[in-house]
Length: 356
Image 1 (cartoon, rainbow, N blue to C red):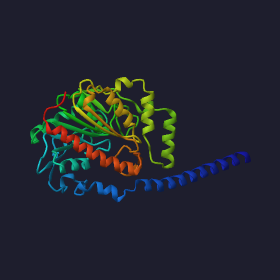
Image 2 (cartoon, rainbow, N blue to C red):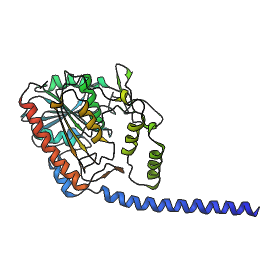
Image 3 (cartoon, rainbow, N blue to C red):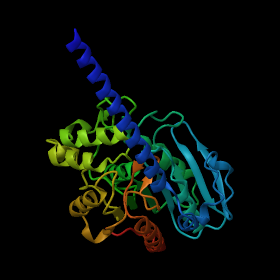
Image 4 (cartoon, one colour):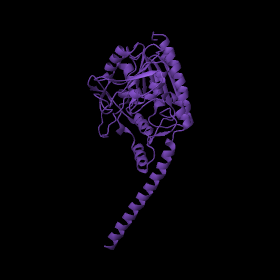
């Protein structure tokens, strides 16, 4: 009986000490995370054009020289950023990432520079898919119809996507080659991935086309070691880093060729940006894959910032997730990519004829 009591006592001590150690580690890591998430004034200054944005109700934003109206059609949801003085040909359709936003900061930058922008949701709103699972590629159909009837000039049409929105953008260039004239991708993916759902056992593709699920890479294909490291980070409260998991999947998946986005039909001019220290997914290597597979190499421009992360924004950690990069490198990538973006768009919209 004494032996059993001693064993129970030791178990209680071990569990208690483990809980104490974990609590201390979570406090230390929480403090460090808060420090890493801090935004400096120099970063805020780079977004001076977006100071009038009302992110709780974008339609109520007040950006000088830009009229913003909500788009709330049956299957098209978002915002129309219409400059009072449109300076360029065509229109821009803009997609955010897996956070489910319309990327209002970039919409503000483009519209204040005279571009007519349609910042669109592709899930999570109104009659769209509630989660990033089985989102139909045909979500583009009502969007392009809306642009055709509301833009001053709908061609050339430029699609801009970030992260998961870049994955969608690349698919649109493949499935709608006659409609997408220009394509800009931030932190892109060369593959279609498992959908993102609150139900982690829900292994379905992010995308469908004509009611058929597109092939996808599964999160379960990540190595046990990578999963173990991820769970330990979660347990001790370190910022979550997803890139090693995605990289492991790419290396191990037996259906990588099927899940690789086909680029043979694509005709769009292509501009890509990626950070070499992306901690969300390996966007720089995937961007290289896209460039290598693109049918017209002369139409591709790839800019990789070696020390930047997934988001060209100061902090390397955002909302408890490690997005990566060095703070100053992220700021520099933001400034340089904005400059290149505006220069490239200017080149594309000067001439309404697309290069083929």
